[in-house]
Length: 358
Image 1 (cartoon, rainbow, N blue to C red):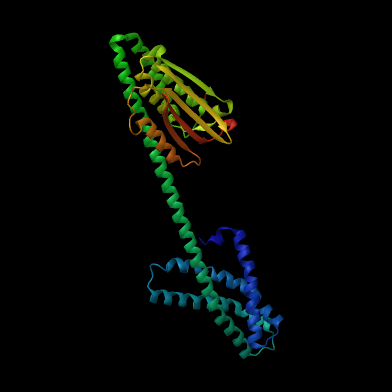
Image 2 (cartoon, helix red, strand yellow; image 1 turned 90 degrees about the vertical axis):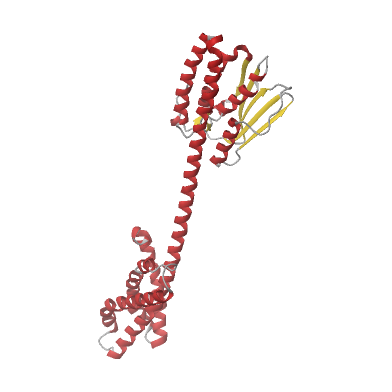
């Protein structure tokens, strides 16, 4: 359907604009045939609305003769035939009006002159309508192509996010099963409690992982469940310190964002030290930006590994896929401490959409 026919307001504005076209045609008729300007205006102006409706047919003509898929000869013949037919469709119904407004004293020659002028003038007017409709179609095609590209990018990003989130559970489960295996013979009761905690953690992970975003408070609740699992294994060697501002706890973050970072801190920091260590988690909002840091002690004698582990790389790729402005991940190691800093836009949850509190 023609875009103007889908919206009565657009159609009204379109027909109103044809009053200017009618005024121009009346001026041409007046100057070419020395008719009274008021009579020329009376003859042409009302019929200009009919011409405007006829010119709407250019939409379907342009769609039927696309510029990029129609040979020049066929295109020229088709457009010329359409212009002639459109002009005839205008002049034919307008003839009774011309005869009535011309008055009983108008000669046959004068009437034919006016009708002939209208027929000839209708051809270039329709040609301009064709050109405008080709431009409109080109604009719509460009907009549709841009929309398809955006939809494809969104679909690709969502698929990448799903794939990255799908990596988290197997990666964590592999490490947890190794921990349980290590406790089976030395601490059977600890292995049992770790299995129970693991089941609770995985249920919570599935619930949060299915959502687009969660509050930082919910994410930290999941992290606490992870620490409960690892505490069975490490005991007092694993210590956790947390400083989270109240406005930061309500911020929305991608689900399962912190868990890979604290898992990395346990695996490559606490587990490598005989005396264990403290994992420090801080969160604060400054100038509309949420800043999260996870810091842990590392063994000074351990050789620093090149590159990043699976957890850090996963988080980095997820942040890249989200395409938020001012989003970054920085990792550094100095003075016996490893520090990961996350920067995200501070997006707050709506008051009516609070997640279930753990």
